[in-house]
Length: 274
Figure 1: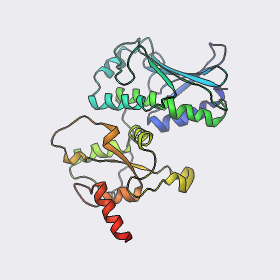
Figure 2 (figure 1 turned 90 degrees about the vertical axis):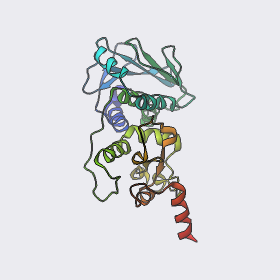
Figure 3 (figure 1 turned 180 degrees about the vertical axis):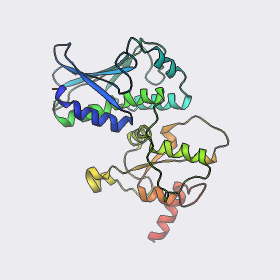
C-alpha cells in the first residue's frame, strides 16, 4: 500500500522541507515500507526515515543514520544554536497523541552526537490508514517535522526565488538577505503554522477557508525585525514568528526600516473601520 503512495509522499516532503527528497520501496519486512532520504545524499551517508505499517490501523516512522554518515554528523555538531532550537521545536510540534521516542533522550532537549541516534514515532488508530488523506497526514504530522529538523541541522538552504522589487525590504544587503531567506524558509512557515494556525493575527482572515487549496498563502512575520538587532541572538520560532495574510504583511512593511507593530496595524485597521 505504501509503495503506491511514493509520488504523493515525495511531493508532500519536498514541499514541507524545502529540500530534494528521494525514496525507495523497502520489501525486507512482512509488509513493504518506504525508505526516505535527502536527494543529494545516498542512504549510507545521511539520515534515513523509514515509513512502515504499524498494526492494522497505524504507521511507524523511524529516523536513523547510515553507516557512513560521519561527515554529515560532524556537520550537524557544528549547527548554530538557532538551527538546533528550530530543529527541536519542529520535533516538539508533533501532536502529543503521537508517541515519539528519541534513543533515550528527552524530546525537548535532544542532540545528534553519533551514528547511533534514532528517532521513532508511532501513529495509531487511523480511520482509513491506506487512503491518501491518511498518508498525507503522516507526512505532514510526522515525516516532514523529522526531515525538516534534520535539514535545518545539516544546513540545507532553500533555493531562493527572485526577489519581488515591489516588496518593501529592510535596508542593507546583508540584513535584507537574512530576512528574505528566513521568511521564505518553508521550515519556518511550517513551524509557525503548526503553533499559531493559519489565521492572520491582525485581521483574522484564514485564506484556506476562503480559497480552499489555493489559499495556502499565509505568510510569516518576524515580530522583532532583524534590522533592529544590536547583536545576533538565538532565534525562537515559538515567539518570534506570527502568521499574517499577504495584505496585512505588506501593510506592516509600508514603514521602513522598522515595520509597524502588530498592535499599531490593528489600531490603524480599527480606525478605518469606524
